[in-house]
Length: 228
Image 1 (cartoon, helix red, strand yellow):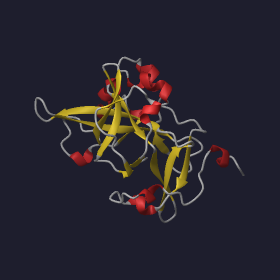
Image 2 (cartoon, rainbow, N blue to C red):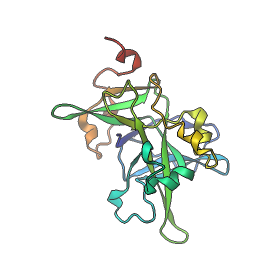
Image 3 (tube, one colour):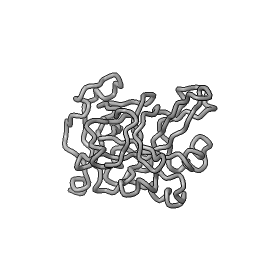
Image 4 (cartoon, rainbow, N blue to C red):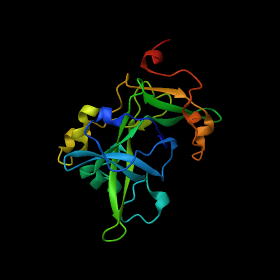
C-alpha cells in the first residue's frame, strides 16, 4: 500500500472548473504521512480544496503515531475507526502519482504510479474532525485501498482507490446511497494506470528533489504487461 504521494503541477481547474481553493495546493515530489495534504470536499454544493492532516485522528485517538494513513475498503463498514467517516465524510486527494514498492529478494524497488496520460488522479479518502477547543479544530484524512488490478498486482497487492471524475458527486455527497458509493470501491481499470521504477532516494521522506519521480526504467502498463 502506498505511503508516499507525488503532487506536482496539477491542472485542477481544468479538471474541475468550479473548484474553490480555500488553501494553496500542497505540492511535493515525495509527500509522506503525518504531513498536510490537499483534499477536495463538497460543501454547500461546491467543490472545495482544503489542507488536511494525512493520518486519520478521531477525537478519541491518544497516540498520534497510531493515526492510520490508509484504510482497507473491506473494513470501512466494520471498523469503528472508519465507519462514521465512510458514511458521511468522504473526500478525494488529488495527486499526480503515488509510490509503491515492489518486494525483491533482498530489497524493495520503488515505483511511481501515474495516469498513463499523466492526468491528475483523484484518490478516494475519508476525513474526520477533531476539536481542540470550542472554536478550533483539525481535519484529518486517510486514503482508501483496494486490491491492485491485474496489471499492477506484480508490484503491489493493494493500491489507493481512484475515483473517476464523472463519479465525484456521488462519492463526495453524504446523501448518496451507500450501496452506490460502495460500487466505486473497485480496482482501477487496466488501461488507466502505469508504473515505472524510480530512484531509491524516495525511500527517505526528507528527500524533496524532483529526482524522486525520474524514471529509471520503462513504464509498466496494460499493453506492455500483455506482451510475452
